[in-house]
Image 1: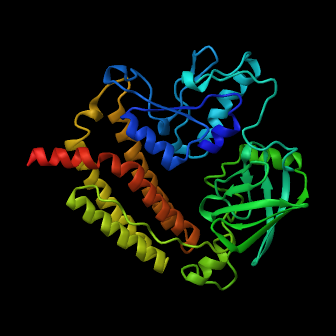
Image 2: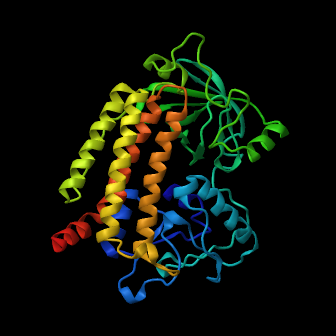
Image 3: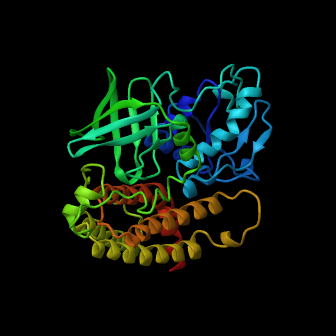
Length: 395
């Protein structure tokens, strides 16, 4: 989020407002490392907004006269990185038509300001050549594509992917196939898997796009796949066993991805939920070790039971009556909606992988572990104190 805000920093004020006081605002700054955003908080309950939603459920866009242009862009929880593409589509015409200068950040104005040029949200073509590259690693070479607006695409290894370039470093978020960091060296991009310098990667410019390639990517759903009769999953070697670890390593990933051990889950101050979180950790550790369908199915079962019990407790003691509230803004309603939506997202990822006839790749396993850590830190810790206090009162 902050990288995205930084790319627009000369033209747009990106404002994050905490509806839960200064502590949450400080937590956002430190944990998300926000340096290009204006971060504020609402000091009094009487100053709470009367409409809107939490940021993960969509941004509110204002013009340079502070008039509402869009009340809710696409929700990040629902479409992930495509939420920023939707936001950019709302901003682009405002940048073309607005005049003046961006308000000072101290004023906490979320205006979209004047720009004499139509600056891209990602690197422009003169910064990094757009086109087809040959992407190489120890296991071979295949084609990848760097498109405008941060779209990264590989027909052989399909995943919803993006790229950014800050003038010195190219960062590729390849979804289930991992994250990569490369630097320009002559006519190549040279680097490695993020956090593993020994797992090298290189990208060499091959050619410019054909008009057909540009058109195909503009209308292709890079999230769901569909590259042909065999889909977009990499083809397995003849005779390989799709349920074996060897097949997973060789046939369903873009190289090896290190599975970082799961970090300890903070206590939520409720013994039963802490015990369920420990069961989740055990299932995740088993998945990281076995990387097979049985371990994945066990994790899904543990998640389903835990999420259902957690939501039952929250609805009974923290989000009382929230689900029945009408229109207007409600911080609790926003928390509930985004928290439960993240549950559904995590479950959907496991179910989708179970539907695949391939083994469980290490990149997917690492993503699942990181998702659990992020969920525990970003969602579960917000209910710890109020739920614990409510349960004490209810006893």
